[in-house]
Length: 117
Image (tube, rainbow, N blue to C red; front, side, top):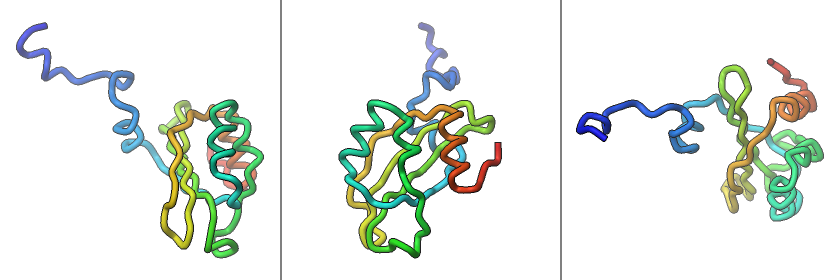
């Protein structure tokens, strides 16, 4: 390792995930509030659990809902989701970062009526 190796730009695989998320497109979706811990546990097992969630209008369940932040690159090849349990518009709990495939994301967006890829 030479002196100037510290100035080399890292590839996208080497960058920390949170930094990559900051550079991706973000779409917020609200879901009916279920048991948040069950949601996180099921998402650890299978990303298909995302399709069981029921989208909801923000004004319908303003007191308590689950906010999902979907992060995607330009081609929707790399997708992630972070869930937040919201009570009275304040985050109470947050999940980790879950990887979502392009097909599951497309199906989830179809439920919203907003497929744009």
